[in-house]
Image (cartoon, rainbow, N blue to C red; front, side, top):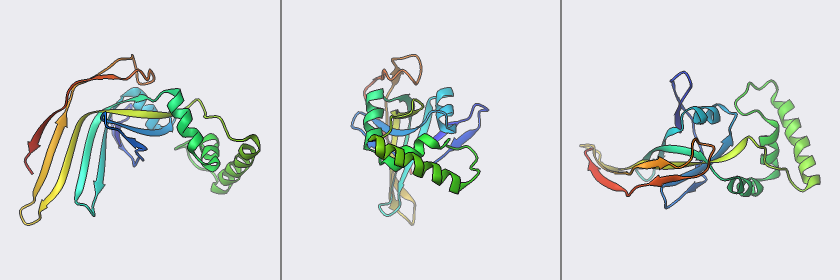
Length: 183
């Protein structure tokens, strides 16, 4: 996922899309205080790339993010293992790691506490994010000799209903249009 820092520099990282939905949205989860979370708060525009080399296929997606609802974030949180919940609670995602052993001990202790308590509550700074796609391009590998790849792009207009990415009020989305692209 590509974002922009507050210094207007590009930033990129691997993300796991937990859901890809028919309405043209993707869902992922992260800590809002991480570098990614802060970048999304400052500029909700993102770009994502997916590549399947064995299939000779890729997808490029652009859009804007918003928080998922608290209910959606809570539901996914509860589906995670207690070890993953503990790790999300005790680690400060992206901060300098002083001691891996020390962090592992904290996660182990918090996991033990979680098992005794029957789970952990989702931290207020840990959310689901929904990407509302306004452009999707699919690429299929074509004839290698001439690089005759197949490309098609879908576009639509989206308009945020809320004031900022934390509103979770959705977007007004227009109809998709498409066009073929040259290789």
